[in-house]
Image 1: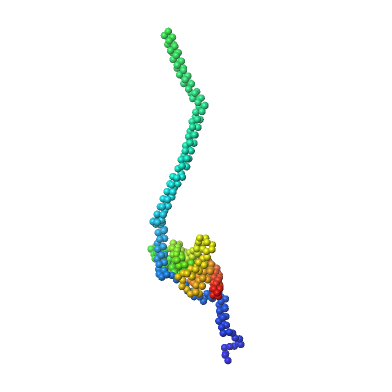
Image 2 (image 1 turned 180 degrees about the horizontal axis):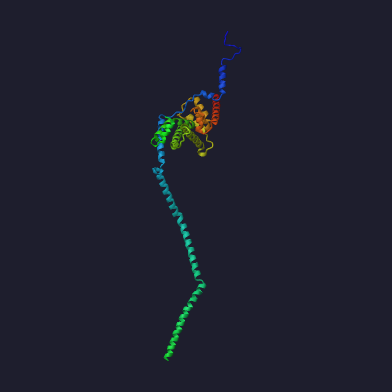
Length: 162
Length: 182
């Protein structure tokens, strides 16, 4: 008699294998554990050496970028941007600015001219005209008096003569 | 060479370049494989890796040594990958653009993929995950990072990362079961 069997129950031959499979299948991560963690991705030959050099080259170019004024390409770009903007300003001024400015200037000069003529008109108003006419008569009177005096003198001299 | 030695070499003007060269040599492959698993395409991964190291070059002076250099570089690399994918999804504002489908096609067509059918199925299952969850899964499953290291790299709590990884594993297994039964 087999000493190992101490109970009357039996199972199928593969029962314990299946049981183990079932338990593992219900435990998260067990299925993944079966998979090897092998990296399936590959790289071209000598890739990492090339990449190492690429990184160092990129680093060098970044060092130049720290001083953008000394980078030829950047300087040229800035100069061309500056020149273009200056040319654009000149162009727009000459094309769109002159007519408007001339128009404004002519209008302003017309306004100034009209103001001047108004002032002149005001200066030659009737009151001022009377003032000027008042100024003249005394002079005329003086002249008249002088003439009268002369006449008197002449007449007196005539009387003396007579 | 230890990270602290690399940093001290970098911070001295006369050994700055030597320190950076050592840093690139030490972390180049890790960064490349992290980005490659995220963007699948070799050229994109190459560009992203270069960008990561240029950012490291520009910012290492400001690196505070309260975090490890390793997790700091991982953080830069993770952000680069997530931003790249985000930009790619928004490219030309085409709403019907399906990045997952695009990445699946790259997996099938690339000459730089060498894996058996089961491994490729696993990769395709991983591609169905949301981007950040995919990043978490790759870091834990392939790179064997601890949750603490991942937390420092991604700025997410350990608890949230554990939950995210657990969900990722469940989703992937579900995906694999469905595909294996088909």
